[in-house]
Image 1 (cartoon, helix red, strand yellow):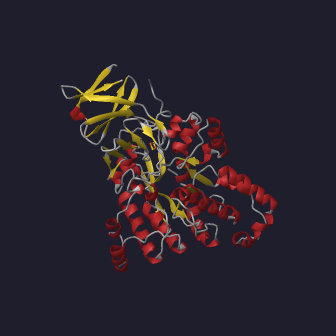
Image 2: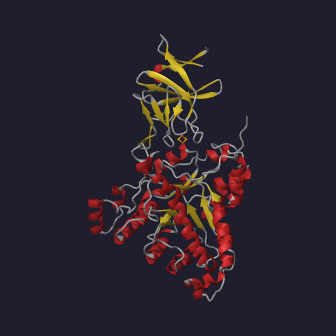
Image 3: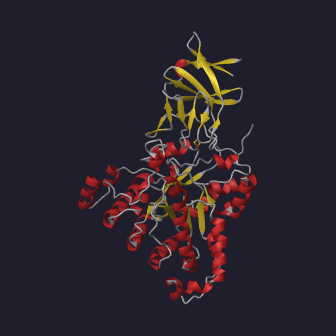
Length: 363
Length: 112
Ligand code: FES
């Protein structure tokens, strides 16, 4: 039987837009320039997340973060992507998520710089299908811009990496300096979840992982839309990673409904006030489908076929989804679902597997 | 009951799974300290293969093989299956299991 390139996992072209490489402290320290930071990190390790939740709580396995292994260098990344029949990965280190939700800004900034140097010198390699995003020290916008300027010309760097957490709001106007830089370079902003800090008094890790990241992502999506980020930067592309997708129809409809009920609200956001703009240029849902892309893991499609089909359609999956695995975490989604689910058409599969990623990252 | 010789027992390392295909059915065979067990090689969670359970890859042990309890944990998201009954308590359903023995020539033989 002949297998067309669009119907088998092995033969299809697949890009994974949320693949986690592991950076060990010793490796990182080779690139840390400040002796004080080096001493501190050598003694105390990387600043810890203030999050009370760890995937290890809910699992029988010891290490939910590394359930499928550790990819510390190019060779291990190549091996890991081959294990999933993935051709291209955009790496996003576990480290970034940790730092986004921890303390000690000066130390964190130095570690981010160190990682970015490691990324461009040792990891990113388009000929091996390894791309990366430059980590943003998002707690310091000026420094974030400097990092983009320092690293973005490397041909393996295809975007900037931030994290939606319980405390950051990407709609705030100081981020304009970053958006200026990204749009001038035609680079997307990838935003991944970081930490669990939105809700108190949860009882289980399962509650946290089911709902905290989608919630923190939605908070940031709405914050950016309603504060006019995409009126000021219509070409800015944001890739939401690991935020879930099934909320997209609800947020689209609810945000439009609310906006139409109370449109005068938006003029008092800093950016729109400054621009003397009373209303958004589009309905909130239009930005949601125009400026945002969404990585697929956790896909959590309904089992019932017609519900899955409706969900994919309501999310405009064909034009907005970008495949991701979340390798090597215990929550990994392999690309198999795209090939086994009869509700995923060949065209949709092709777009989700690699064409949308090519569009977002300019691959 | 038809039987099929799967190979010499040396081809089935202890504590690991080996994928075999018998008349189009994909089966994972596990060597639990010299005793062999076989289960349908398809985890119902996301239809992924069970045979990598217990293997060492890229600095991690994928899933687990527990000789004493005669169970495996799926290498992908760690659902646990009893290799005798095929049962998983979370999904409350059982995968088909198969009898496996060794013959006088120290070959692994599957009954199906
Ligand atoms: S595929 Fe087996 S637990 Fe997920």
